[in-house]
Length: 202
Length: 257
Image 1 (tube, rainbow over the protein chains, first blue to last red):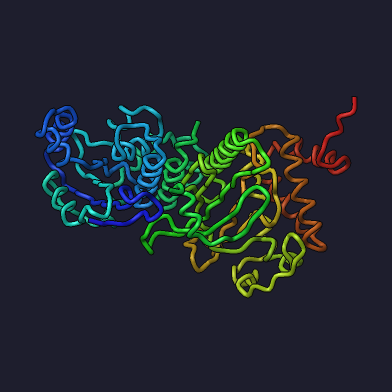
Image 2: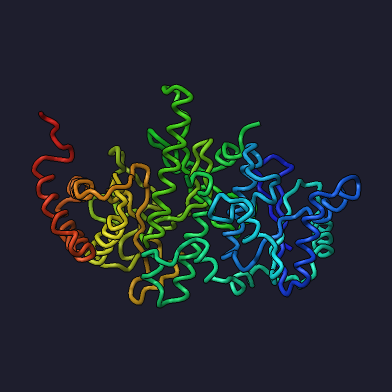
């Protein structure tokens, strides 16, 4: 797990904990659990929501650590300004990643699905939230193998990324299509910038 | 409590200030490994009504961000976006390690835009360091502007100060013979247009910038135009003809009658 701070934000939003899991199994059960937890009532509901209080992100659609951090930054900024478009800062990260304004589409594509095999998990909190506790809760919620973020780029499904961002016909992509390494760098550049400017996309 | 973006700025290093915005170098996270970003803050203008000020600022931040993304999609070398806070008027842009073309060409190094002399040793980079002959640099400029115009983006303020070369030490070139890359910056005055007039005026503004900043630069600008012409293909004829008209009358069209 990797933790870092956003020192310019109000303390309850200033700590970010992120982890990458590969070989994730039972993602269908995880998805069902999230849906049940969101509507469960009483103290059981509270406990369940606490146990899965993370952003679960489809890792094959993340192109780089910078991509993830940009989405986290914009989501936290929206939360700090009282400008969340979704219910929580965690769902806002998923919303920020999707190019369109459709929330359920964002959840379907960038959230956990029945076929998810690798996951990026994010928890935003304050300094009172200890990294060990976050890591323990993440491990308890996910069946998979924790991996370093250096592996992220091998897991990326570039075809799906290009499709969702409608990059197939862009001049910038067509010029570099013979050089996969260069193409990936160009796609990553466009994707990171799209996430950063989503709030003013219009 | 001050907003997050203002907190960010208060800890950032001021790079330069204009009438419209201040530019800073900052870090968005606590991670030392995260690259620095350039912050462009369109600060509040006390001389405007607050409501008007807010909506103008939001529109301009959004416009600049959209122009950059449009250029990226069209394969124009421009810095990427890192954060946008339209409420506070802050744009976070990829930090480009390098030097402005103005300072690398003869005549541009000695003085700043307002004529004050500058003797910051850090700005003493020479073209040798970038390992690029002047004529190749002019070609890159022409090509980059052509790519931008083919995407119907008009820069609005093309000068040698608004072009940078990436420093070879921090740039992984994928080009066989070049160790640097030309990047167009500052899209604060840019707009979308497919009009020949707007493209010709964009070139004219650059021509004037060359001749007023760099002595004896006619052959330099001529090779910029040659490369532009090659890249534009059939669109060049009309733009070239219009550029001749613009040279005779200046940037503004006469509105008589």
